[in-house]
Length: 96
Image (cartoon, rainbow, N blue to C red; front, side):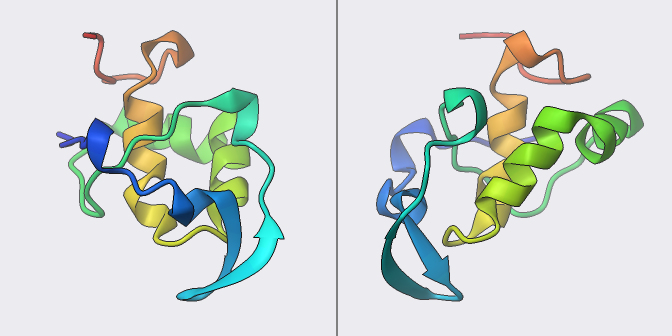
C-alpha cells in the first residue's frame, strides 16, 4: 500500500548533493536508468516479495545508494520502485 504524489516531488531535493538538510553546490548525476522519481510516504505496507526485491535487486540497491545524498530519500525510494511497472517489482502499481 503506497500513496504517491507524482506532481509534488520538489526537483531541488534530487538535483544537488545534500549533507543532511543542507544543500551543497555539487550537482548529482541523474537517477539510475534515468528513472522518473516519484514522491510518496515514508511508511508503507509491502509484500514480502517486494521487500525481497528491494533488498536484493541490483537496480533497487543502486537507487538506494544514489538517493543517500538527496533530501528525504525515504520519500522517493519505495514510491519510485513501485511506480515503474516495467521493473517487475512484485506487488507494484500496474496502472498509468
